[in-house]
Length: 199
Length: 107
Image: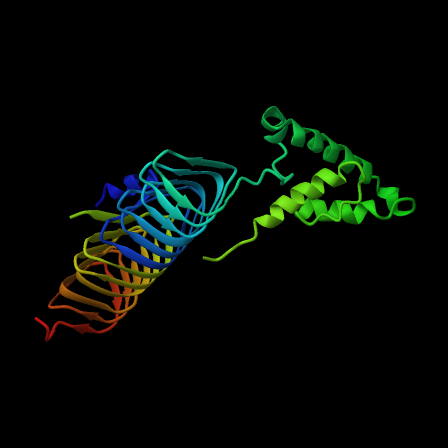
């Protein structure tokens, strides 16, 4: 047992195959589930659901690797991977979603493309994939500085509220800037389809 | 027997049950029932009622403990609650407040 202190510094928790946890689980380390977890699960690191593992919970993690069963929604800040043994029912919300051949999945996937928040990773990668949205993106960038002028108080009252809405939520778009408006509305409309549906 | 470890940064609020050994280095609130042994390590904090076969406590436990075999309070542990088991060991240096009952009818 004395050695477990340094073992603990490797930051990993294992829920063994015969263990059932029901309730709320949170932490800042990797978690491997071989048993059952029900309720709510939030981690700042990686969740690994092994083939024997069953998670019936709403999950918020950085990364999730599912080889077992997950029933519930997963929100990951980085990635979600369903391996060939993975079975999942629920919605996935994550910038990277990997579903391997053999995995079974029912639910929605939201990679959050429409959201302007992580601007850092956008410009390099996305335009190559989708030229259509690429054209929309620079437009929003342009629209933003245009709305910025602080003295806009007197000549242009509509832009500031529109800009405020956009910066705090990607979806609420009264969209006053004229040029990007149609595309953004399209994106907003697409997002609206992604309403949370409880199973 | 497989081993389950609740790491030091983990917080569980709810119920844990199972039939394998459980090592707690983190925080558990609620209820723990196991058919095997529970180890609460020095960094472990448990605010729960505990029903196990064996329990070894090196950390902090608040709650009632019922063991079918043995409860061991190790040096530097802090336990508040009632303890009920056929065998109860309290080491020198342990801090404990509560009732002790070794007269278990079940065994």
